[in-house]
Length: 199
Image (cartoon, rainbow, N blue to C red):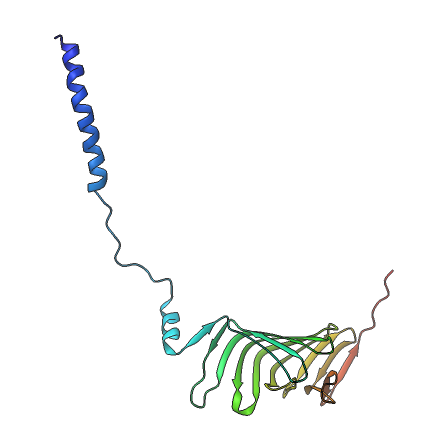
């Protein structure tokens, strides 16, 4: 047997053994496992969640005795306790009135006082009516049992009529089941801006 044939014979045995050795090292050498996994929450978020029960993206809907539909959503809600109301943040509400009208409401925070039949919206409260009137105030108190609301502080409104400011505002219907009205009171000022005709 010449040297060439002998070298080929050795390689036929050595090459498969080398391949097996390489494959075995792939399974034997493993990366270290990181046991210090990072929790995807900031420490403050964890502390806030541990303080009390909370619900993410709660949704409420109902119908008043007059047939008005109410739908309320929030980014976050926390249950109340003894003498403490339930609170929510980034609230938005839609009121579909039985007569076909619609009112949209949004605020930064809100609290519910069931014993007083009141829901209190606070922090840049915005009310938008179906006819395009936009009212802004810092606090709005609404009834839980029907479509009644009042703003104890100043309000600003803009719409087709122009710009309006008032000391406070009330939302209610004059008769049971009648149309809903917004009543502005206390030093009402209106800056009338007539619509420019289209050319």
